[in-house]
Length: 475
Image 1 (cartoon, rainbow, N blue to C red):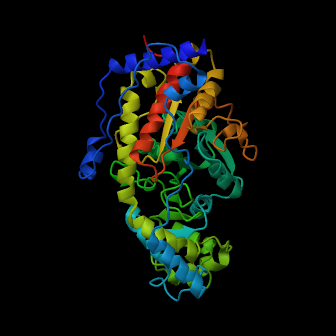
Image 2 (cartoon, helix red, strand yellow):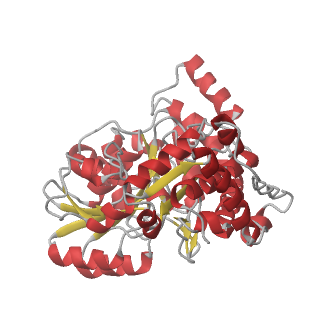
Image 3 (cartoon, rainbow, N blue to C red):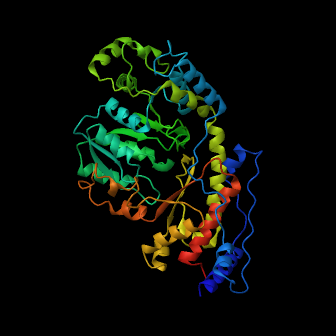
């Protein structure tokens, strides 16, 4: 019986594909940015089977499989960065302030390069993205006992940073587009009028409507901070993320566009916040003079140096050395990411089989995005057709059998599921039903830059096949 079903599955996919246009193309913006590149060729649809398969092995072989399964590949360090790191190790020049001046310091060079890229006045390189968030909060005036709001859908490092600052976490519901719900922000601030700050997370590079969020925060007297761990290179109305808040944090953790294994940056246009963050990060004695992108206010530094603790969080020279050349290649890599993502998204949208059950939310029209990962959800009506929530596990199992690993955001072990954050419980906020429902059927699939475009195309093939197998095809 199963062999007949699989035979019919191949036939139904081929039939549904035949009813739709086979033209898939990247966005005009991406094409213009890389005119010399050629978009990946469209794969032919599988031929409908005329008879039942001879064996289960034949049936399984008929369907697509992932051409690569090393989805945890991270951005490699350029040769220039490797050679720089080796020189530092040979000379023993690893400490954040070993170099005599900012002009010669790799850490200051990395700070200068990133500030120039994002357009911020001041930049302090630190040991992790979570440290950048923590320091931006403390630098902006968040104190123990204060209430700090954040998206309910984010990574556990965000509420962790709030807890690290001694503050209370208050969650705000997220939308189907994986961004903070603006109307829910208004409601939450009404319920918590004493909130001190909002740590707005651009989770997976998804950016909310920034202008109304800033207006709401300004009206309520709430400090707006931005978590840009996933939004490096992303722009809202032409402005790099991190400029609507008074400060932001960027991550250089291994799975981000900048890879030092672990690292981060705090960026701001506010001189007082910049000085406070630098001192907290470890700019003791005259070491503040070794920063290239800090305010030149020595008297203020000398006062802060005895008022604030030295937490020794500034980035090491070794970590900075591997990041410097990566900053200079960001736009080139982002262009390639966008070409591949746009082609994949267009194929999913154009496929009557995939679009029958799966949805990839659009970015806001004001946003110039960066996609190093595919975020998508199973449509609620598809779950109903397949018998309910158990179909989520069935879909994951079907994809895994074909070599496709997916990250279910709502799983009981996922660090992006707010239910799992016992260190920052959501009890005072409520059950957050909308966020819980969305993440229960939402996934992320990494798209490593080392994969060829043909490897990215196989993601589509597997998703389409498994969607048909679990949720059916349109009639």
